[in-house]
Each structure stands twice: as C-alpha cells, then as structure tokens.
Length: 392
Ligand code: TGC
Ligand code: FAD
Image 1 (cartoon, protein in one colour):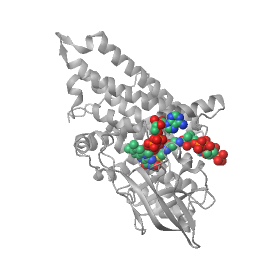
Image 2 (tube, protein in one colour; image 1 turned 120 degrees about the vertical axis):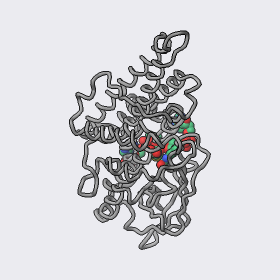
Image 3 (tube, rainbow, N blue to C red; image 1 turned 180 degrees about the vertical axis):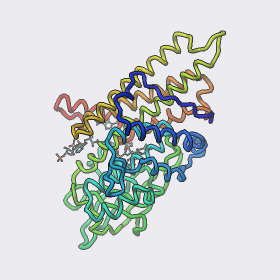
Image 4 (cartoon, helix red, strand yellow; image 1 turned 90 degrees about the horizontal axis):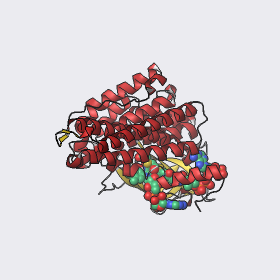
C-alpha cells in the first residue's frame, strides 16, 4: 500500500467544538493508526488474517473500554472521546474497529452494566488491557434481525445451567477468551452469561470465504451441553432489552467509525484527482469529479455534526435508541456511497490494494448489515415517528 498521507477533513471547523482532551485522544489514535496500522493492514486484508499483534496498541490508545470507570481498568472517558477513537480506528480499517467495538460495547459494557461486582472485578481489568479478549453471541443461523426468536437455551441444573445452541457471524469468536452469550431459560426469558473458552462442550469454528472485514476474525459459537456456573449469569438485567441495550452502545460507536472510513476515501480521492492528469489537466478540474468530491465533503460534514450532537446527548444520558439508529444508518450508508464514488475517481487504480478505498468499500458492506441492517434501522425510525411497528 502507498504511504499514508491522510489529512482529516474538517470543513465546518468542528475541531473548535472539541475539548483539548478529545483532541489529544483523537490525535494519539490517529498517529498510532498511521504508524502501526496503515503499513500492514492491506496485506492482512489480502491474506484474510487478523493482525493480533495490534491488540496491545489498541489497548494503549484506550480503545478497550474507553467509557468504563478507571476503577475497573477502563479509561473513564466521555462518549465523544469514544466516538473519536472509533472514527480513527475505522479510518485505518473497519475490521479493527469491529474488534474494539465488540470488546468495549458488547463485552465490557454488559459486564459493567449488568454484571455482579465479582464479575466486574474478575473480567474488566483484563479486558481493558487486552489480556482477555471477548466476543458477543446474539445472532443465530435462523435469527439475525429477529433475535427474540433465538433457539439457544439454558436449563437449570442446580448450581449451574446447561447451555445448548449455536451462534453465527460472531466477531472475535475464533480467538476470544470469553463470550457474552444470550440464551433463553425454561420460561423463555433471555438471559446473558459469560462463557469461558475452557468450558467443556464450547467450540468456536472460524468462518472463511469473506470478501468483507477480512482483517477481522469471524466465527460460530457452538454450545453442546456446556455447564455454565450460576455465578456467570449477568444478574443485572434480562429480556431482549439487555442485549439491545449493548447494541445501542456499539451502534453509537459505528456511527462515528463510519465517518473515519469515509474521510479516508474522500481524502484519497481528492489527492488522486489533483494529481491525475487526463486531457491535459488534473481530473480535479473537471466538473464531474468536482461534483463527486463536493458531495462527499458535504455528506461527511453532515455526518460529523450528527455524530457530535449524538455524542453530546449520550454524554447527558439523553440519546434514544431511535436517534442512535438514525445516525448508524445514515453514517454507514454515507460512507458506503462515498467509498463507491471515491473508487470511481481513481479509475482502475481504485480496484487495487495500493489504495485503501476498495478495502473500505468491501468492509462497509458488513457494517451496513451488522448491528442492525440498513432496513431495520429505517424501521426503528419509522416506528419511533409513527408509533407503529412494521417489523412483524
Ligand atoms: P421489541 O418488542 O421492540 O423490544 C423488546 C424489548 O426490548 C426493549 N428494547 C430496548 N431496550 C434497550 N435498548 C434498546 N435499543 C431497545 N430496543 C428495544 C423494548 O422496550 C422491549 O422491552 P420490554 O421490557 O417491553 O420487553 O423487540 P422486537 O423483537 O420487536 O425487535 C425489535 C428490533 C427488530 C428493533 C430488534 O430486534 C433489533 O434491533 N434487531 C436487529 C438485531 C441486531 O442488531 N443484531 C446485532 C447483533 S450484534 C452484531 O451485529 C455485532 S457486529 C459487531 C462488530 O463486529 O462491530
Ligand atoms: P436477516 O435478518 O436474515 O435479513 C436479511 C434481509 O432481510 C436484510 O436485508 C434485512 O434488512 C431484511 N429484513 C429482515 N427483517 C425484515 C423486516 N421485518 N422488514 C423488512 N426487511 C427485513 N452478530 C452477533 O451477534 N455478534 C457479532 O459479533 C456479529 N458480528 C458480525 C460480523 C460480520 C462480519 C457480519 C456480517 C455479521 C455479524 N453479526 C454479528 C450478525 C449481524 O448482526 C446480522 O448479520 C444482522 O443482524 C442481520 O441478520 P441476518 O444476516 O441474519 O439477516
């Protein structure tokens, strides 16, 4: 891949609305991505390998549990800092941001929010350093958009539960030390639990043949009479609202992360358009390429403002699920459209791994599907504004 010459677009001087702390955290992450991620990530994507050696660096920039209290090993930052971290990491690669999102929002968040004091002390500090890595098992082969229909089951056996079932499309599964898993009890009530890799009957086969998120390890979670001790059940909340509450946090981070991918595509296309000469002048001097680039920066700027306002609401504890859905849907779709347009600006060069655009584009095809598809988020907005659910 070419040298990383990234310059972040900030057309509306949004930096002025950030605190010094926000900028320090953002800039440290940006430097780390430039130094450690950009030089190696394309090769990992080509070879479909997870760059495990980057886990230490991710922990060092605060990407594991940025909003988790320092008492449990987290960084104790606000939600705008969390968003900025996700933006910078996804500027490098959505797969790497996935690893950080899952660890922070889908593993540390439920343990911190629904876990017992013992669970918090046992797991959170090690998850914050990356000594332990986690995954989140909600989706099943027959239940993706509709997790309430899940078939995974636990049966009460006195001092433990017996867990049976299967989860599919689980990020981090192939290497995770623990899994936060959602299954129904005998009364059909969804419960969350921490399953450890060492538990007998638990396996995590890797999913291959992905054209998207090739730097992220995806797998299944298979539970065959797994004995889950009762102390591993998350006691703080049950019902579908418990996993959906975690998704709110992860979707929020994705709304920011997608901006990073879009910024990288825009910046690459702008630089290329200024340098590429056709018909005796830079293609940047043609109206058609200017239209593409002008629309890109307009959409990025709107997405930045949406994310920042959402971050303010989140900091005040006022961000609603529907507001988060709107931002996730809009910003991921925006990024995917920009990746497709930016790829065209580069002509044939755009399809190569010499540039990051095609990788971002393929990654974003997963991002637009996971954490609630583009359609599901539209229906969440529709339900919010009309009061009618159109899911069923
Ligand atoms: P519904 O009847 O609407 O709600 C059931 C209960 O949950 C409550 N609730 C929420 N609670 C907290 N936070 C939220 N966001 C909530 N949304 C709903 C709701 O109030 C109700 O509570 P109660 O007490 O009345 O029971 O549920 P539904 O079955 O109609 O489904 C609604 C729908 C379709 C929106 C939901 O199922 C959904 O969001 N589906 C999409 C599934 C999804 O997003 N899966 C993601 C899996 S994880 C993942 O993709 C990780 S990728 C990570 C990476 O690599 O980065
Ligand atoms: P389906 O639910 O089968 O949907 C298929 C199509 O039908 C979609 O276009 C959808 O929008 C549409 N559709 C569904 N219902 C409706 C409706 N009511 N009205 C209109 N249209 C509808 N899950 C986890 O639990 N943990 C993870 O870590 C995780 N990581 C992932 C990593 C990757 C790379 C991918 C691709 C997925 C991951 N997922 C994970 C799963 C992800 O959350 C699901 O793929 C997603 O929720 C959609 O489910 P599905 O693929 O089964 O699609």
